[in-house]
Length: 168
Image 1 (spheres, rainbow, N blue to C red):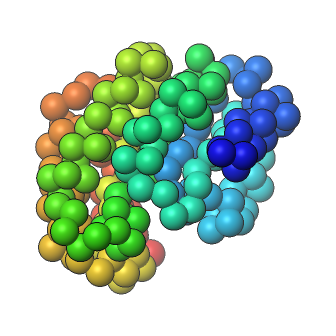
Image 2 (tube, rainbow, N blue to C red):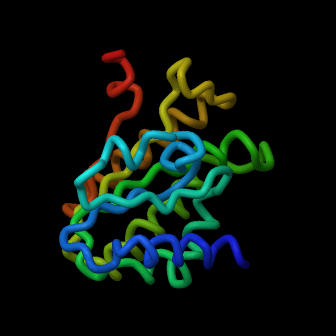
């Protein structure tokens, strides 16, 4: 998968693997530079990188952890994740909130195993108009399950996207 290797090469070619205390943004288009066009301007002078890939799902990231995520700096300070939106909006309507949460929990635990000293932040799916999540009830269930999971783990913090966007 050339595009996957391109993400790793982009990381290495920009000299980011040598930076201390790197913050890595991963997940779907919410953190992809195709959506967040000013990412590197917003984080200019900071040790931050996005490896997000638009259109991706939680189970894809879980499967890519060893080939993509594990290649990044061993000294990651923060990992910020936005996943779940595409699981709800672009996959089979039969996917349940519990299935999405299962993959989310496995992914977060796997990241913690690889980067035990990193702070992990999981951004909820959110249901505000801004996100336009079609199956709102499942999105709320996903966020409630994710929040409970995060509260049970000292190494991960749940970020309530609805609360964040209520300010705007």
